Image (cartoon, rainbow, N blue to C red; front, side, top):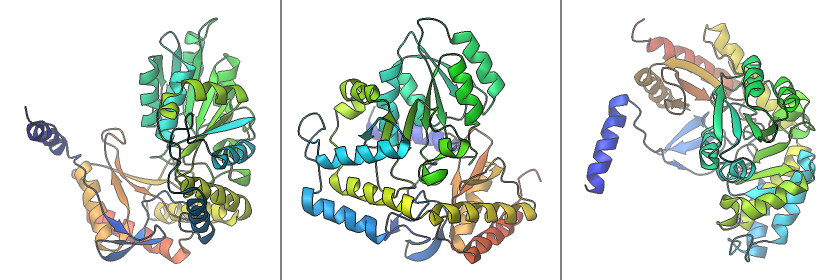
Amino acid sequence: MTIEQIADEKLGRIRERGTYRTLRELSGAHGPRVMLNGKEVLLFAGSNYLDLSHHPEVVEAAAQAARDYGCAAGGSRLISGNLDLHEAFEAELAAFAGCESALLFNSGYAANLGLIPALVGENDFVVSDQLNHASIIDGVRLSRAQRRVFPHGDCAALDKVLSEVCREGVRVLVPLDGVFSMDGDIAPLRTMVRLAHHHGAMVLLDDAHGTGTLGDGGRGSAAHCGVMDEVDIHLGNLAKGLGSFGAFVAGPAALRDLLINVARSFIFTCALPPPQVGAGRAALRLVRDEPWRRWRLQGNAARLRAKLAAAGIDTAPSATHIVPVVLGDNARTMTVCEALLDEGFYVQGIRHPSVPRGTARLRITPMATHSEEEIDALANAVVRTVERHPAPDA
C-alpha cells in the first residue's frame, strides 16, 4: 500500500467524522491583533496570554543570547550542550517554584514523556483525571504503569481509587492539570493533594496554563490554591504565559539527578536553544515585575464571561483566562468559527479528540493587552453569530 493510499484511507475516515484539520497561516508577531491571510484580525485563539513573546525586553534578551551563544546549544545536555545559561535559568526556575532544583525540557509534552516513566513502571499505578492532557496520557502509556481514571474533578472518586491501589511497595502517582486547557477550570488542588498524600501517593502538577498567569508572583495554580509547598513535582511551561519556548520540572534535588540519568526525552535530544533560554529568563523577570499583566488577563476573561452570561451563553466551568462556549455539534462549531473570522475575530473551534465527543466548542483566550472595547466587541460578535447559527435540532 502506498503512502497516498494510507493517507486517503485514514483522512477519509477523519473527514467523515467531521474532524478534518488544516493549518492557518499567520504573519508577524503574536499580539492582540495579528495578520491572517493578509487581513488584520483580533486574536482570541493563542496562548501568549501575557503578551510577552514580542516584549522588547524578551526580544532583546533572545537576541543577546544569540549573539553571545549562537542559535543552538550545539548538542545534548549530557554531551556538549549544557551551557551556564541553562544552569542559571534552572536555578531561577527552582526559586520561582520554591523547590531545590529544576530541569529544562524542550516542551511540556517532552517533559511528561520523560518524567512519568522515570517515576513509575509496570507494577505501579497512575491515578489520572479524566480530562488530563494528552501528554500525561502518553507519558503513562510509555511508563507501562496501570492507569486508573476518575471522573473530572471528582475528589470522592479520587479518594476511592487511591484507597484501592495504594499499598506497601507500590508506587502511585497522581498527575493533575492545574488549569484544564479546554474548560478553563482549576483543579480542586487543596483537596486532591491532601487526599493523595493521605494515601501515600505522589503528586505531579502540570501547570502549563497556570504558569505566570495565576497566583502570587505568577507562580501558578498551586499558589492560587495555597498548596505550593505541598505539591511534590511542579511542571511549568515557558511557551504560553512566559512567551518563550520549552518547559521545566521542579522538585527535590534527587528528582533532577534522576531525570538527568533516566528521562529519555531529556537525554536523547539537543538542549534548548540559547535564544529561547534568554527569552524565558527575561519573561520570568517580567512576570515578577509586572503583575498587572496577570491581573488584566483575569479581568478581561471575567468581563468576557459576564458579557456572554448576560446574553444567556454559558461558559461554565471556566474560572480563568480560557473561556469555552460549548456548541456540541462539530459542523456548527466550525461554521460559527469561520463566521467570526469573517467578522475579524480569530476564535478557534475545538473538536474531538481534543475534547470529548459531542462537546465541540469555541475556545476563547483573551490576552492581558486586549482592551475592554475589544472584549465587548468579541462578546457581541459571539452572541450574534451563535444566534445566527442555531443547533441542528433547535
